[in-house]
Image 1 (tube, rainbow, N blue to C red):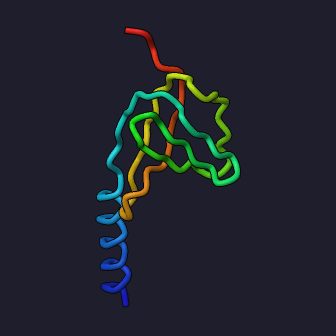
Image 2 (cartoon, rainbow, N blue to C red):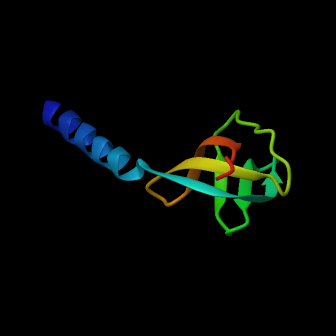
Length: 86
């Protein structure tokens, strides 16, 4: 029984490590759907907002998005903020 618990824990740890691939993307907001909690940038990247996150973004606004991909390839937003001018 203890071996099954340890094995299950090892599998969960491996899956979570695989899914924790963070990325930072700059872009312009072309769509924000508050009903489905999704955000799309001008490069075609779409992101799912974590439950309870309601960012104050406007269409056409330049933003930076930090996201984490899960093991299904879904991009979940960790941070959305204004893009800095270089």
